[in-house]
Image 1 (cartoon, rainbow, N blue to C red):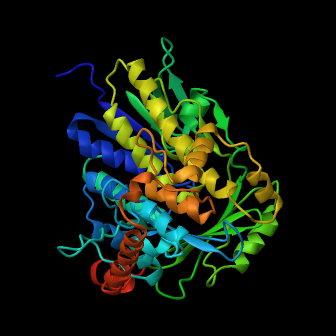
Image 2 (cartoon, rainbow, N blue to C red):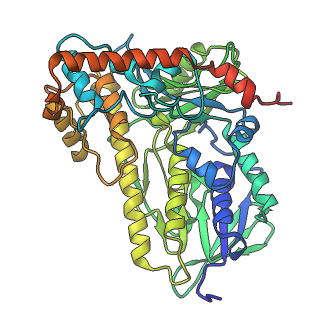
Image 3 (cartoon, rainbow, N blue to C red):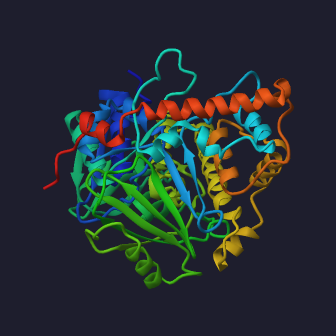
Length: 502
């Protein structure tokens, strides 16, 4: 037996982040690692993360969740992308759909042929060539591969779900598998005198909970990494000035659509996330450009149905802890940092960092080289997601003080370079396996009005007529395939219909 192995993991805080961490570590390490989760029912959770992106499916598979059972347990629906309304200018909309756009041919990406056809006036909007996007707006869904011989990709999907129900579902799974839950409020953190590592946390009852590795999932409070270990917070408000959100559920007046909607407003944006039993709504805004009462009134006026609870305010500062892993403590979720959920990355960052933690899982020596690499990779992911969100705000033609500020913002250098290269000939720079793929950048670039001056010469392998015919054929096949799909409503009813909540 390795006497240097980490045997005791303490997760501080429940909610989505805490139970996701506990479930994954328990599943991967089994009885070799004892997992204890400390939480208090008296402490509320933020719990607005109800929309996800496709990598959540890999996490669910890793911990052994059946997809249909998970959807039933969480009142879940399918998500094929995000519709952005009014982000370039009022009255316009585009889709950021999951999966690929069109069908690549030879050495050139589909969109390079589309750029040629567009220049000739012979192409529709880029949205018309994404099967996930067309299916989303048509209210269609089918899981699995397309028929044999099809020239189209399968639909790429993620989920909408109730984050509180998801945490409850994972908790049940964890407790069945041996994870110990302790109810209680933490009032103190004990540090080792020799090296400043966390030795234990003390509860209000006086109980000490000791561990080898501590995972801070205590939300914005960051009880361990921020308060006990003193890791400072890096403020990104100059790039993303939104610092408030109101959240409220409302009735679902018609069948749930398989996509999230984000609608720009005077000083931010409003989300709409349809579940089986309700719609999750919220408004994100900057208090510098709109007061809280005005934002709340606007949100309540734009609901699709009767509000099911009073709206609640969430105050935040965009940014991150300077280190995500320090000594024997790793922060996940809001304890590690916050990026507004414009592209539904909140839950993704939790399971991405859980996977990274498992990859760098320490022994009792806590090698600094591994800690440094974990921090570098996590910071890279945060920065690239930040840049993607900034792009939505920066490339706009809207009126209003926030939008003027963002339009004249001095951009992070990496984003400046990405935009310049795309404007030149439609090339998309994607480095070090960053989260968002070329097709995601493509849809947001074009949707926000960032249009290339030329195209990649590789697309000149076809004549003008051949390029137009190829693009037209892909569009026709996409529309035909979507017509053949069942509705999202029928698919949910057949495979994943949830029981009514009491």
